[in-house]
Image (cartoon, rainbow, N blue to C red; front, side, top):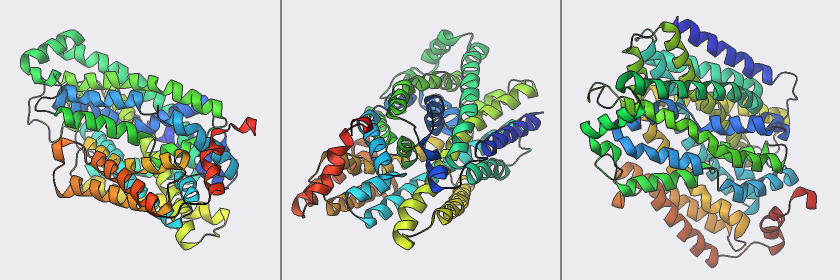
Length: 487
């Protein structure tokens, strides 16, 4: 019954994803930006689904169970993450409409007049994207493996979900991603509230008794700055996530898919309400403290499916929960996979190999890239050992290095391409050094150290090199401030 419900849900998502792209033109603008036609309702779920992923249903409860109050960093950045988009979102939208940009690097490389910068941004983006896709596939595999009591092995669970996402992203592009996210967003929000309220009552007799029991068993779970996570690590995790949120190319690109500036601003205004969905998700993890003994789980990310399988629930309920968790993972993996492939085609392939690539060939190259990147992520998901939250925070450290580039594009006319390239390279290398080769000073996230060095290098090198022509720079610094209807 669990398998039947899961596969029925996967078929529904597959049908909806393919159906969304039928009878649409085959241009690269349609495939990447949905012909710039998405309304507020679809944008709300497209943006929400892009970030509420396997990390939300598995990584979030896993952190609440293993680290307690430290998991509140998730609420902080989910509520505030889109607010910086009020600064550059409308500017990106205006420039996209005027000059037909469909990716983040198209805008930035045009501002700095550098194909090299475009290629570098594409490489950094794709490496981070692959980590993010792996996170989703790993989450989907966890769910199918645990809820079926091992009938579906880990590798097969990841492969099944990977195949469904691959098919509708290949066929329908961002429009298929958007409409499946509407379905999956509604479904996972409903299931999150049901589980987040029911599990505390099932194990503890209510939400207040749950926290009272945690206070008796291990009060450090209710205090930030304890052994689970220091204040420096907690606050830098919030900062890196908020600053890096809209730097993700697949989220930044959504400024080009909206049909109006009003729609874009409405999406930003409403988006923090999506963060409310994370409250019951964390309750799920807190419910496991004192109930599931330490050392029982191979990974804290398995807390939700483990608790459900121990309750003797009817298979129908287990199937719905498994489907909801798949919804969370798929709603992110589709938009990330699509974003990675679009970035490769527009920002790397066309800049490095073939600047005269036709519209039809561009769509073909993008589809091939979808397959390749998803396959690499599948390998990492099956054979990698990192936790879901560790994968997410690691990817953020690289992506946040785009922040100085975006800021300089719209606000600092003196920035030069030499400064932009040098800052990006040094920032990524510093993040890599502290993430992989050694521990970070003062327990501050590696991406923050990379960002600080990035900004310093950008400013110094820009001041030492020849500025761009004033007329060219004004197009971005001043023209981006003017709404389309005022031109």
